[in-house]
Image (spheres, helix red, strand yellow):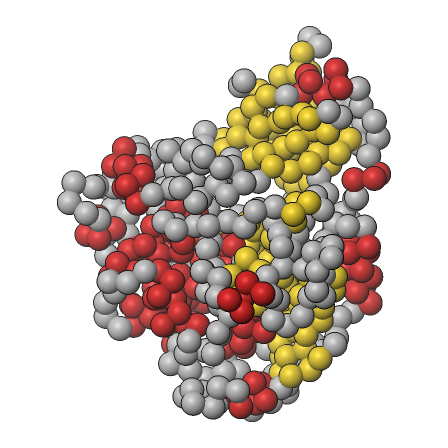
Length: 459
C-alpha cells in the first residue's frame, strides 16, 4: 500500500496550471476493507484475475494497492502498469465534447448530419433528428454495433473496421427506435462521436485526447498507441487464464481505444472530483450533468452513468476489451474515487461499486475447477446461435469437452457446467440455462444482474 498526496503528485508537473484543493474533511478511503481484500486475493489465487491495480482517491490524496502480475512469468503489477481501459474511453469522449461545447465549437443540439460527408445521411425514426447529444447519452437510435461489422480476426475485432464501413452503415441503417425515445448502449454512436469531435479539430482522436486531457493533466502514459515506456510496462490481457491479443480500434476509437495506468487514471478521477484544479474543470462538471434517466435505474450524463448509492450518486463507467476489465467511479458527496484495472476478462465492477457504495454486494465468482462433467453429445445439442434481441445474439460453440459463449461483438468466453443444462461463467456473475421442447433444445436463458433474458435458437 502506498499513499501519495495530491500535492506530491503536483510537484512532478509543476509547470502545469493546477493546484491542490484543501482537505475538505470528507470521507477517507485509504485502505481496502477486509472483505474486498479477501475477494481480490481469492480471485488472484484461483487464477480468475492474473493482476489488478487499484487507486483509492480522497481529499488527502491517493492510495495504491497492487495484486498479481502482468503475466505468469511477468513483473508484479504497480502504479505504472499499462492496461486497456476499454469503454472508459467513452467518458474521455464525453469530456472532449463538453469542452467543445464550452468553447462554442459545437452544440449538444447540433444535428449529426451536419458533420457527415456529402452523400452520407443518418436516417431518423420519428420527428426528431439525431443530435450530438443523442450520441453522447446513448439515445441516438444507433445499435450497440453496426451490422457490417465482420472482423477478419475475431481476437482483434475492431482492427479492420474502416471509416468507409462506418459511413456505409450510417447510410444504410434504418432505425428501429425513435430518436431520444429510449436508452440503447451504443459503441457505434460513441465511436462516431469521437470521430466527429476529432474531425472538428482536424486531428486524430488520439491527438485530440492527448492535447485536451492527457497532457494538461500530466497523464504521460495515457495514449492509444503504446509508447516504448508503455510497452515495457504493459500487462498482457488474459481470458480464462490464457494470454490474448490486444485490441486496436482505429475508426471507433472514442468508444474504447485508450490505454492507461492506475497512476494516470488516479489523476483523472482526482480532477473529476475537483482535487486538481485545471482548465478542464468546467468541462468535467458538464459531463457529469444528468441528461436522462432512461437506462433502467441509471441516470446518464455525457458518457458517464450515474447510479444512486447510500452515500451519494456513484458516477461511473467500466470497460472491457478481449483480456481486460476496468472500472472508474467517484461520489461527490463523500469525495471518494476508485480506479480498478485488471488484465483479465473477468469483471470486477462489484469491487468498484462496493468501495464507493458499501451497500453494494461483492460477487461470488466460481472457478472452472468447480465444474461438473457433461457428455460431449449433450454439449453438441447446445451448439448454435440464440437471438436475445434483433441486433444481439449469443453463439454457443464446443471444443472437446469445453463449451464456449460469444455474444455479438464480444470475446469468446468459457462456459462451465453446474448441471447437464445449467452453465456458469467465471468472468462475470452470470449463468446460462438451456431449455428443450419435445426433447429438442430450442432456447436459452441468460441470468445476470437479477435479470432473466431469453434467447430463441435461430441457427
